[in-house]
Image (cartoon, rainbow, N blue to C red; front, side, top):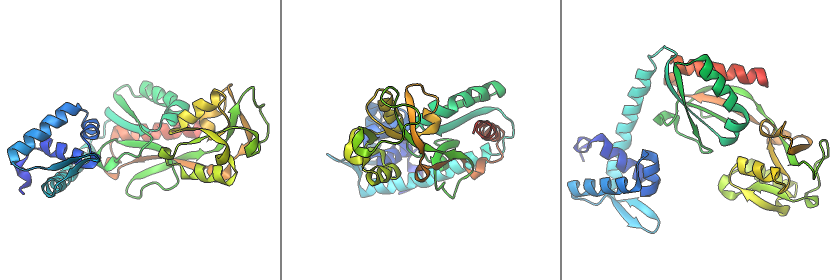
Length: 292
């Protein structure tokens, strides 16, 4: 199939459906409505005279023709995004828009005041903050900069280690007092991660300390766990940057070395010379180093 038979917007639609496996997921990726994706797909299939996806209870699965179109779209996307990165990389001025992705807890507990101060220092740079607890693809320009905890940052990205993220057990004030030791697993209720959260490090700690057997409240984000502990649902392992200083929480015992991770600031190598990217990464690194 000739890749030039379809305009880029149609190719993007097919690629989004293939990656998401559903019209609703594709709609979120494309920032359009479910109905729009449905109409576009129908029009594309009618124009080509071939079915591109099989509709089933499990979602939308590409037919052989759909796989061919999606593969062509992925190749074109890679070229388009590569050109964008290289062109953007020539811009040395500290002006324009920077899209940053980070987690909900990091934004609330650490980064919001840093971003606000950055905007005052660089009024010509607009920030777009994408809150996501899932990794985004910087190579596809889903974001320009990622700030998130990891022990193994992707090798194809450049970045810097900002600080160590320490974690400890926290409980609700009123139930515990500051300085109390970590209670035995059976002595309190525990708040833990839902399986959808995919937090193997914490799963292993809770299982090893018997806390998993006494976990009666689970959430699929750290922020959800934090909120549960504040409301008295039990004790939980949480990051210090989020909990220290919160009068509704008390830290029990010391930090947990095996739960420590590193906070990284990452971007694509093609953007290393962009003025606005350098301004943001330098500012964030200096601010967090000063506050660590």
